[in-house]
Image (cartoon, rainbow, N blue to C red; front, side):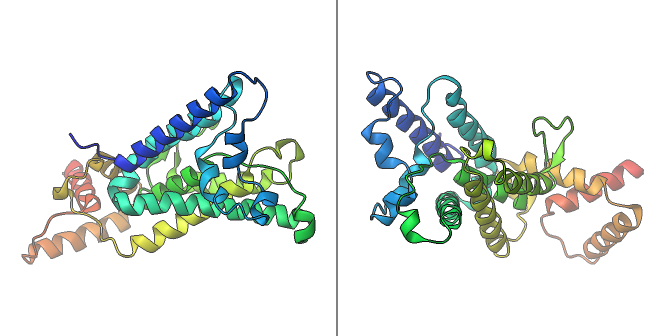
Amino acid sequence: MKHPAPVARAIILGNIGVAFADVLLTINQPGMDSWFRHLLALSPANLLEGAWWEPFSYMWLHAPPVGFWVTHILFNMLTLSIFGGPVESKLGSVRFAGLYLVGGLAAAAFFFLQAWWEAGFSLQVLHGNSQEIVGASGAVLAVVAAFAVYYPDARLFLFPIPFPIRARKAVLFFIVLSVAFLFVPALSFIGHSAHIGGLVAGYLLARAWRREMPEPPVLAKPVWKGMEEMAATLAVAELGEPQFRRELRSLLDELGHGRWRPLTVRERALLRRAHLLV
């Protein structure tokens, strides 16, 4: 049986494979970085020296997958497994792969720009910046941002917030938090600028593609239709009575004039709410 999200699954398996390779290459040298890690990691100095592949390769490598840092790859891959499926089903595998790649490249660009800014916009000073960045966080957050565009009313739990928050507000929360953390020296080891780059790129790309994507009818039965049904039901439930009646009246007027067609998820939610009032 064909996997419903083949690209998301391949990305997860690829990241796990790279992590195992990294462990095997350093198993006899605990605490030391392998040539493999130096080859894949993104460094401003290396990039200026011509290491053009690093903006593509760094997103497949994570912090040394031993001890506490194993959470780096686990968190990224768990997030991708949750949000990747619905987004890939919405975009299709080719565009999903493009979204992930563009998110990772945008994250690398934002990291490079931050390093350039910290170097006083001097390329000569930047040549001496051997700081390295690794991880799929930027690419994964591009997927999360796209999820917020296509399922804005889906409710998410974000630790340590003890109540659910809408997906679109969650993305805004991530951006604000990452910008704030840019100015916290104790957290400089985290690529906050890369996180911002991934979120911004994912949001803009998903918005651009959304204009070309009419809301799919429920009869198409996408694999993650339950996600859309839930989000639409919550959104309609929160409509004020005047707005709800306007939308319902418009729908019933269209159907009453014989313009039959497959109903969208929002229209189904409107009818469900109206049924409960009968």
